[in-house]
Image (cartoon, rainbow, N blue to C red; front, side):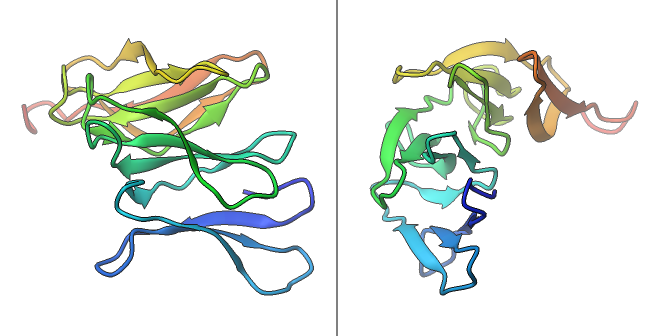
Length: 172
């Protein structure tokens, strides 16, 4: 994602020796700056799709970690490198937080929970209202339908998610 200064911000994946990073590549072409190197206590595997608000705060998700080890929504305040955990996902309607973080004009964050073992296990669309610390389930995907790709939001605040259904006779 590109911030208001034209700096590129992104994530690196977790590997056998590291838990992932969040970095910034300044628009002036100077050296890459590591904003955060994840430690086990923060979680493992930052997902792509960082979002930057008008104030320069960076938001994203971590695939695993948090209270139930199903993922964390985080913020890195503008001009800082410390990561703040905003909410942990309990795995109620899926296995972990997925790719697809979007933000509306009010500052509310919306994200996907990927299919898996939690709750219904089908995956869900979640909301983290601005200033709150708990996630709300807005929609649960029906059995046999798997959310894929990214969550999207339009200028009116409507949410969109792509989903796949196995072909007839191909799977459960």
